[in-house]
Image 1 (spheres, rainbow, N blue to C red):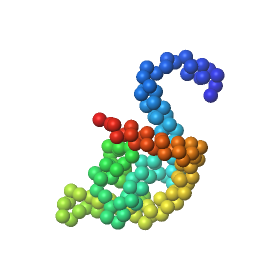
Image 2 (cartoon, rainbow, N blue to C red):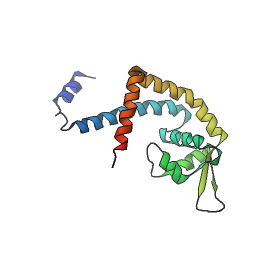
Image 3 (cartoon, helix red, strand yellow):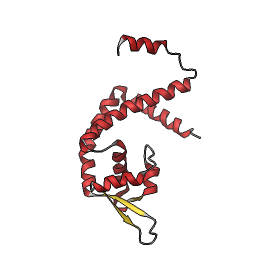
Image 4 (tube, rainbow, N blue to C red):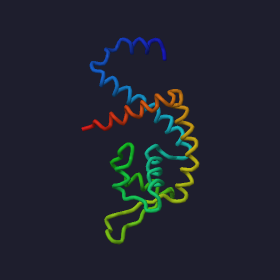
Amino acid sequence: MTGRIRREIKQQKPFRRIEHEAFVNLQRTADALMQGVAATLKPAGLSPTQYNVLRILRGAGPDGLACREIGERMITKDPDVTRLLDRLEERGLVTRTRDRADRRVITTRITKKGVALLNELDEPVAQLHAEQLRHLGDQRLRSLITLLETARAKRR
């Protein structure tokens, strides 16, 4: 960081409320961590959102999930899950089948190719998370997890 930028940051007014400062810091931290995830996934041609969907489907097992259920389980909500699934299907990472009893329901399942790709990414992503957070130590990480869960539980 250059001296000019440091001076500009110091000259800015402090946050009016501690909640705002905490929120902005949370956003900055999430963005910094996600940049690492995006860089790790880029060689595989996946976005973090696509990776999240594949992990959800791997966890769902052979029964798969309906589009609505995938959307409900996503970390970051995507208003166009259908297009997201289209791209994954084009790559052969997922399949979709229409339910015979209720033709409105389309079930998405991860393919063997999708599972293989996730298996290849498991270790690099785990290493990335360790590099990003290990310096905090187990006790601080547990406290952080508790604080974040508590913050989410208080949502309106």
